[in-house]
Image 1 (cartoon, one colour):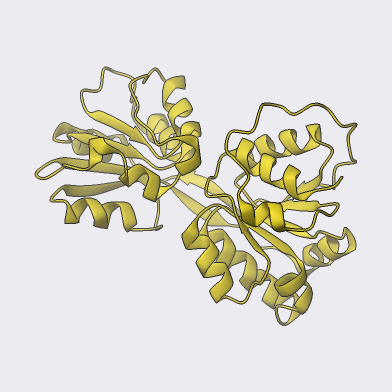
Image 2 (cartoon, rainbow, N blue to C red):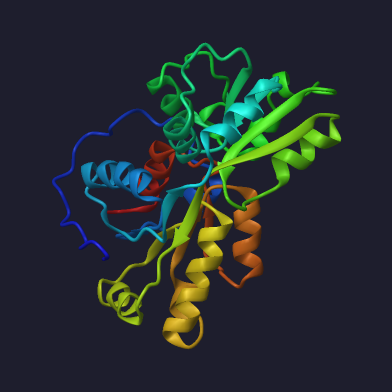
Length: 281
């Protein structure tokens, strides 16, 4: 079920200083009271909700999918035997892999995480030597810019992820001469949303939607199209869509969305900073 919109909390001082300068695109946007819909997976949604509540920004969450374990201990153990490099692309990839096979036993491979949250998930199970991009580049492109992944010819690389998803990391590393294998440690089970949920969003006057992946963007637009018999002008032209990468921004605009803001990072703090800069609440 969709959670109720939180009542505006009393304003507090900023949780932390801005982690990244607010870009010109955001500064030029007119400020307005925001009512934010968060479509992130549950744990990340809760993290962003807490930050927005502290800033008095009205928000609600609707997770679009759940996770299920998808890889066996044998699959993971076999893959690790000959691997030189391990790459984890999400917190879920870490947690579900570790649930199937203990990853904390003195792994000899060089280990990478796509962002700080994933790095912290690895630290939580005892892996403290993880390399990750800076906060402003927590995405596939930022990971691939790391100098430690620039020369990987002949290296055997395992990418831990969910089922399906983007091939950009693997394709780029293969072009650099690496041997790449996937361990799909979890799979997404998409929820079926009823028509009345979209009606609730309109009744709640949701005017800003946070989207952190292309899969979520496409699923959400398909749902809105089916719930409203078409993507009406409100969602397409009036609602503000906050995305986290150039690729999602391009896709959103190609799909007809006109008010798109790109944070260039999936960090919850940076998302909060951006929404705070856009809001006059």
